[in-house]
Amino acid sequence: MKHPNAVSGTRDVSIAQIENAINVWRNRNPATSDEEVTVLCAEARCLANLYGSMIFNRATAVPRETLTEAQLAALAGAQA
Image (cartoon, rainbow, N blue to C red; front, side):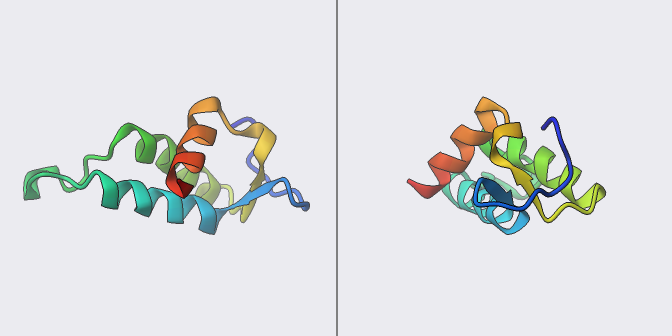
């Protein structure tokens, strides 16, 4: 993520969209035992990094063009 602040417009990705995508990936690839509860798949992990940064910076949305290829792919895959 290159820019942590929210910018208005339809090209933004909201924190709620990021959270939803993380939950989709967590449901698709759940931890296999209680010891692995905090282990995330690669897609959820890259979105979790973005999500944490948004929380830290108090951003409610980020411009889509600031997302990495992996983040964009994880978002798109969560909608498939």
